[in-house]
Amino acid sequence: MQEIIDALISFRNQRDWEQFHNPKDLAVALNVEAGELLEQFLWKRPEDASKEKVREELADVFAYAFLLAEKYDFDVKEIVLEKIKSNDRKYPVDKARGTARKYTDL
Image (cartoon, rainbow, N blue to C red):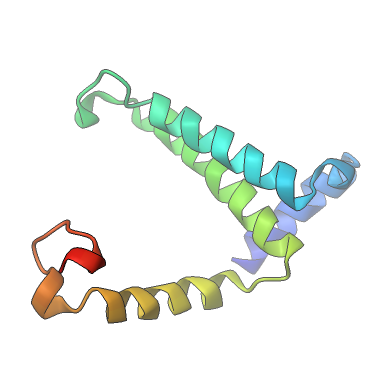
């Protein structure tokens, strides 16, 4: 992951774009790209979405998420693993297996 973050930062810095990459604008950009990812599925069956376009938009989502994490000096691996542990407590296997209910409804 660090290789990806370093490449993103290098790309950004070569273009002097860090000035535009404040946390708010990175979060907005992340949301915009997530919307573009969703658009690939609009009015289609999931299997009819273009895998290439989904791949491209997903890369944009990841890029902005990594840049936002870097802005706050978050360790991506650490925060994702912490979230998995938190979700494990909220969604114990014996209650959550096979259901999409929210943890408050288990």
